Length: 492
Ligand code: 5AD
Ligand code: SF4
Image (cartoon, rainbow, N blue to C red; front, side, top):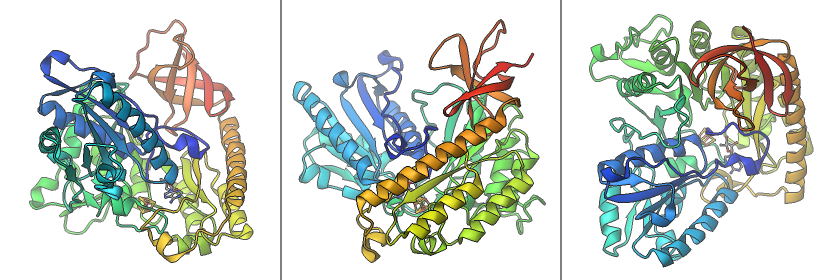
């Protein structure tokens, strides 16, 4: 899975911050909606699709929920804590409804899918419940809820990709945008609720992906992140063989060795996006170690504008635990994959997701996790302790038998090690010069720019006398680092 924010370190920071959209021209719309998103980047991208559907139906965005006719919360179910956060927020918003009795409150996303009508009937927290594949029905549901009917649509689809909907960018910096390339997940990792809340995997038509990325580039964006639960299994089969020629790349391009040319693989897609313009950076998330191919790695190496950074969740370093997790690779297989990445792209950054205290995990298993982290030299990791999710394979088959204190202690050790690895990785960057895409002012000062290296590290540097703007590239020499940030100076 994927995260919108490049937070490091801890469970609490994993959930994306709630956010409210910018106010678009209010006179163009006769009603207002307010939306907050939680969880992964996919949810933030989905909210932009929802915004588009609502705009088409006369709703303009507002940042102020007190004046909204419609309040939406796009929710996450990945861990219990994520759901608790949303419940608390819904209870707060419920109070607003007392003052503004006409306002409708809707819950979207994974919690809607998991809990279905329960939020509406038993808990009476909301007026509408809309699952991730049902956003097209929002206008009808709003009408139903407006007349006091129960408005629920949690049908999952086998083919919905919202391919034809142009997302309305919410709260964007105008430089880096997210583009959803597929939905759902077929992997069935035993701890994970996503296959149940987001349904079967399906890939989006590459033409619409290229169109969306090109539109972003033409409106000033300089970076796209291709999003999917498991991007490496992106696979699209054309109905019309000729139509897979996009951007000069055909599906049977020799670099992929891809059969008779009827299919577009992730490597093909990456190449097509990279060819839109050398000034457009391409990122992607998330990769499953079992599916990332040499084709993808060679395509990354071939194009300077494909960022040298891979989020490659390991989850555990113990083969026995990996098997219980249904990850389908062993410790050795994962380590060989990391070695292969470094062989093909010696400057590639790698990050991970790690779960502490999965069912039956022993001290030895935990040590295996620590040592695989050392081997992989992660620049950054998202780290969690295991949270049992109802309905998952693990909840049905195994006992959540590691006491909380032990889970926390192990997580603590993982976090400490990651801090040390991140620091080591940053120290290695001192004295090096990186090509940085400027994203905007640094958080601390408008005298400083903030941007990222290809390896996805945040670099802050003084603007000095140079007349630069966000969206431009600049060479920056790193001379210092603090926590997760590199500090540099423009290289004239
Ligand atoms: N408990 C803890 N962490 C989980 N993740 C997914 N499900 C769970 C769970 N039940 C983590 C995995 C995944 C990331 C998005 O969230 O590490 O890669
Ligand atoms: Fe969940 Fe595994 Fe699919 Fe990721 S790959 S969404 S962890 S089932």
